[in-house]
Image 1: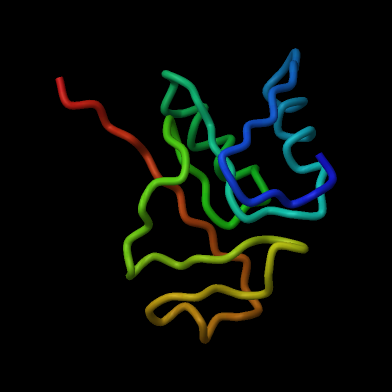
Image 2: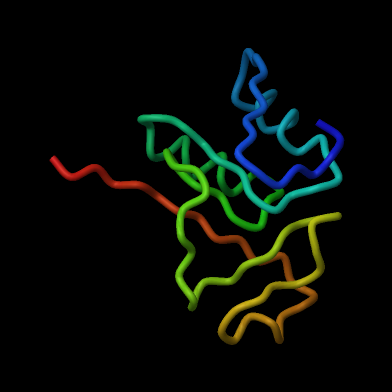
Length: 104
């Protein structure tokens, strides 16, 4: 994808390795939000760290973000972060990682 689309859109692609999936996901000039779907929490956190995205949802999409979490994107998706105390850190690449935990 080469355009930043706002709305309920999913980009489906194939990959052979985790590294290839991360490379494909990062092959864009944008980075506002990304999602990772896996049962392996170690893999989820490893991929979340590797993704060039301001917010990463694990096993969820577009969740409500708490007011005390930073919001903003990487690359062409914005400069710096908004949110309580984070707007002062405009020259850092802060990342939020969200994890859905099932109620069983």
